[in-house]
Image (cartoon, rainbow, N blue to C red; front, top):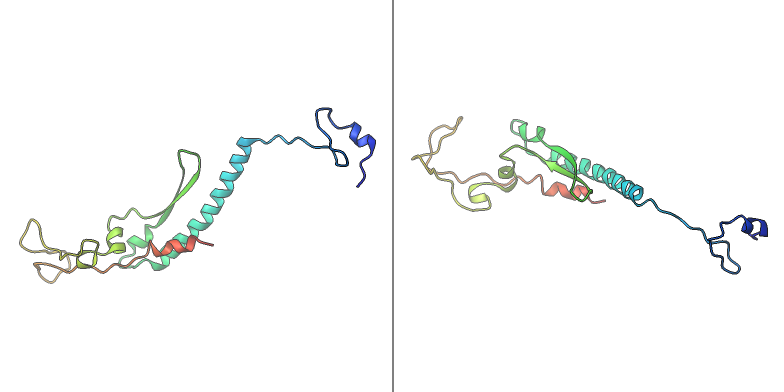
Length: 150
């Protein structure tokens, strides 16, 4: 495309030209606006990934009463530096025991024994017992994180 003298005459006088090239344009970038767009795009991407992780957790979550599965949620908030954050998880106190196991099968690898009484008993147990082996891990949180990867 050939540049006519008329179009060159309309350019602002502070824009430099290079022989044989069109006039150089000055672009003013609104850094705050650009940051807002980036955060918005990152937030949308995080939302999409968080939904996939949550869906994977719901499918993999072991069910007895349904309380643990029903408590899985996504929390949205903004970090101190302004970046979007998504936290996927539960507020049910026993979730870590389901994920990691207990007793011999848990992180401490020991038999569970009473600390203040002579025997262990819980509602639904046939009789008091001196010790229990614990519960095997049923991981559903850790493995679900792979769903966040495209």
